Length: 186
Length: 148
Image (cartoon, each protein chain N blue to C red):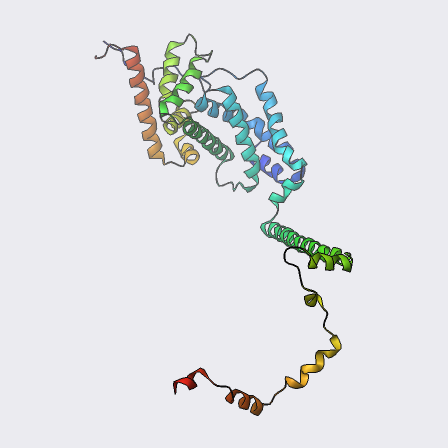
């Protein structure tokens, strides 16, 4: 079902629940994986995904349609992820890399990455990026999101996003190169 | 010679690089979410008051506050009336005995009731004219007279 049809049905009280159910089914996987790539753990991703859709339910009536529906949902999901990670860091009262260590430990435990050393190194390298830069990297590298749409999701300019992705890619390459060659120089 | 890692050269795993969620997760997720968003609508109750317009909440709060104040005044008045009412129930002889005994007894003369029909007795003495007052005051020696 097209987004405008979902929105029209949602505004009618009699069909609101049905419309929202269809909206969830349409976007749940994209939202879940967007969140999961940021928080790594399935249980956390599950909680956040539900939180995202609850917020969508509460605010959909006021959605002004000045952006695409999915962009708007993605923006909510992005903010939920960043808030979650930020509150996790504050709760720990520890240096930033301790939360990173927790995420890395969950990564190491992921069965899909077991036995795939290069992929595991790549995921470790991505995890070392600052949260917002990691978000940009995921959106571009995995979701292949156009920079213009990414700008709407993140509220950042296209130029800044391109620069952020470029730097993220270079950091990842350097990290993996050094990990593959721990001895040092060329 | 170290081989630099090139991200472009690395085969992308697809949009889902991590392990899949449990089987049936996406079939059940919409139901779980609908249970959350539909639940608050089924229980209006007092929680619905938070959704009420501001002016309505203000009015309700003010009514509650005034009602509490009025109730406390009424209850306080009733309590004050109670001791007086109970005092009237005490026999006169018992009251007199209580007041005239103890460490600081009250004298019987203090308890005497004035004859009410004599209250008009002073009426003619308490209506002097201005001239009478002046003459009475002039006749009184002042403290300063001794300094002259």
